[in-house]
Length: 94
Image 1 (cartoon, rainbow, N blue to C red):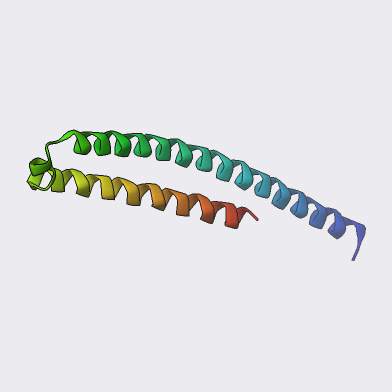
Image 2 (tube, rainbow, N blue to C red):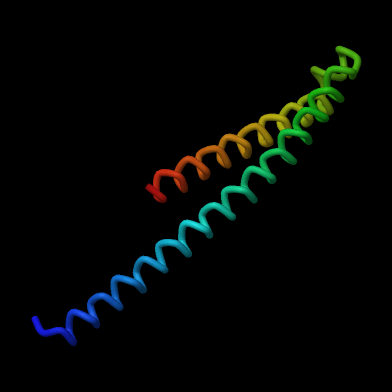
């Protein structure tokens, strides 16, 4: 291989290294945003759990309590999904 082609290949390698750095930075930023969203979801879930606990027992097992529990379950699932997304991003980054 001549020197000119080697230079071109070196340029390509440099471009790919820069792209990897850009992707790594993007993954880091997305991970931070996911963690921020998870914190907000966890806070909302805790608030809903506290509200449910303060309801009279007959209301907790009634329609309102069931709806609140469904919301708590959905928020918990969303939080778990975010954990999975973060884990997948970290795996992809390796």
